[in-house]
Image (cartoon, rainbow, N blue to C red; front, side, top):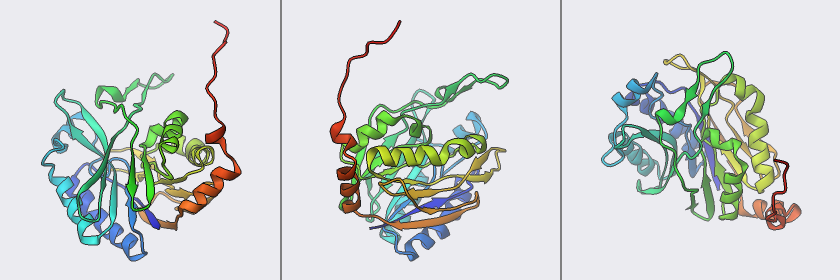
Length: 274
């Protein structure tokens, strides 16, 4: 199966972002992709909580999702929206990944589990949990004969999630993201390759890139990595674009046989100093 990752530079207005996505999706389909991943915050990359509240509606009856479902159906592909903000009843949002099938129907949903809450010396405290409610379930869904595991951005720093996805059957793991430039330069590639190597899975990472209308700068450098940890497709910049690669279940099985880390893993007691 051929897969594709779309790199974007989303802004705060959903209509403009959907218009920017359409030709990139057409390019991916023209290249033969049957599964296409978009970045985190594809639909709206808002400046702040107030801006997000202005454009992010509930999941049920969501007008942007209806447009995306029509795109998936029109092109006859699995369209994986890396994430979109969905308004919840407690006035927070879910950072939700949505897989749409070639018929335009929802095939899978995943709410980002790990939220970035940090106090960094010299910088303001950042509390993603003030705006978003974290999910609580790992998700693996079929994409034809390939099983897809879902993750979002900061999740890539938590190997147990990827281990759970691989043990749940995932052969391809999606990591849509909006990595900052400093963390992207330092960690993006090595984290993605590590997750592919330790699980013997393909990893596809669709990124936001460049300076956005909200003033944020993201790293870009979308990439697809094979189960042996080799980068098989990459954008070496932060501009919008498309990458594609062929994947196979056989390559996953081969990598897991050569290094059977999933099969060899053991539970162990913790005898650590207090």
